[in-house]
Image 1 (cartoon, rainbow, N blue to C red):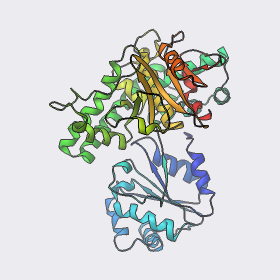
Image 2 (cartoon, rainbow, N blue to C red):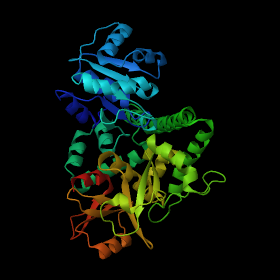
Image 3 (cartoon, one colour):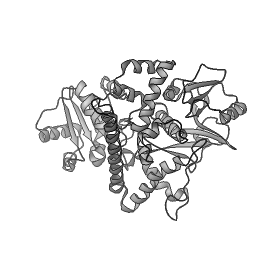
Image 4 (cartoon, rainbow, N blue to C red):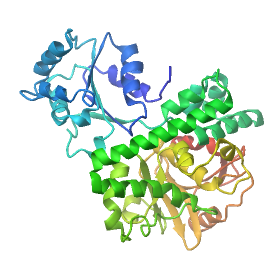
Length: 436
């Protein structure tokens, strides 16, 4: 059974004496339904009463006459032909974005029946015109992060070493091998489950991952048409496919700002591409990182411009697939393209496990991939290098200019002990920035 770290958040919600409904957001196919129904619901409740609004559009009728929770529960009981115990059962609204009245009803569950267990999930929550702000507990599920990938591998001792951040050569070799596999497989649940089927050969597993990735991309493209409109869908698709292309154009140094010219014919300004870009971000398919061109002092959002950002894909495995990269390509560390793969990996780790929005630093020809605000409020630079032996001229420039108390360099090697200001970590420990 595929374990997810967000399970702990759901369990904490379950243990509250009274609660708001949970609204679980995330890109399509990241495992929202599985987590709520099969993992959380199966373990924690007597029964799960699921309404799938995409599969059964007619379920909207249950909400048309009244949004009073007890009236709705009574109608659900009639529809499903079984009793609902609000103290022992979970009521699950799946694909709730397909039914605006069901979304509206969450407000009344929060106000009038806070002892009930109500979860809702959807892949287009960010695209909705409205939802009950302040009346739901919002959670977001992402593709499996690297820690969850190790969990799925079944290597319990390696997982223990990862969580304790061991830095031995033996542990590094195993974690590095897993990371290279993760670059190819990514974190989409279907791909991860397929990859760890031990009875299959590597050749078969690789073939299966390629097909799964192709099907996922085709599914997202269908969604562009369904939720974006026919004309707008073409622009969304153009931006979506341009993100990997622009990332791959980075051979040396950091990923560059996203260029608007050449993405869509006759459109070259941010305002002309803002709609498709915002749509993709709200659908959790791309993530932004805002460069700061001055001393990074808080508040960081005040030091960026809305039309200047880098764009990354939400899953590193799909990024490689969209660029035609093979399993052998991802395992071969001699290839020059590893910089943007490593950078996209770090960004998705930070997005899922640390913070969002994300920021970088650039001045003159110096660039540092990320800025991280520590728990004490300090802003520190984080440089990403895919290789083992790397110079960090940009990071050194940042340190010389601003004298931070700490600086982090993430590399493709084991790393080392702190040396004054600079700490060198292996790439796969990126999520532990949250502990600083």
